[in-house]
Image (cartoon, rainbow, N blue to C red; front, side, top):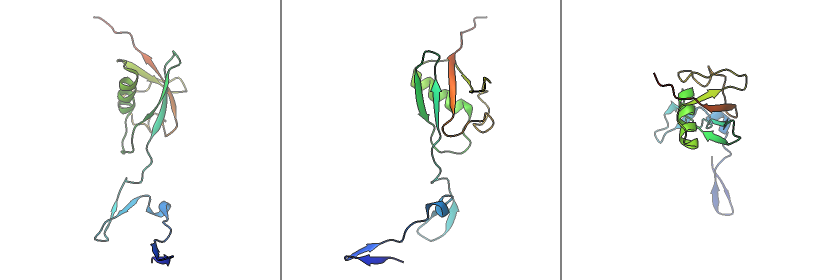
Length: 117
C-alpha cells in the first residue's frame, strides 16, 4: 500500500532480494526473469601490464569465447589465449562456471603466434 507524506504518494520499501528472480507484469502475472541479474565483470591483463575490466553483461550461459571476443575487441589484438590465475589455459567452449570464473575474476590474455603450415 502507498502512504501519503506531505501530499505525495510514497511507495512501500521494495524488497529487491525477494524480487531478484522475478519480474512483475502489468497483468500481475509473474514470470521467471534475469532482469535483476548483476552483470559479470572480469579483469583481463596482458603481460605488457595493460589491463581492462570487461563487462560481459548479465545474460545466462556466458562462455569463455564471449570473454575472449570482448578482450580481442578491447585490446585490438587477435588470436588471444586466456589463462586463469591457476595457470590453466581456458578453452573457448567452456562456460565461465566451468572455467571457474565469476564476477570479479582475473585472467591473463596472451597473443598466440600465428602458425603457418
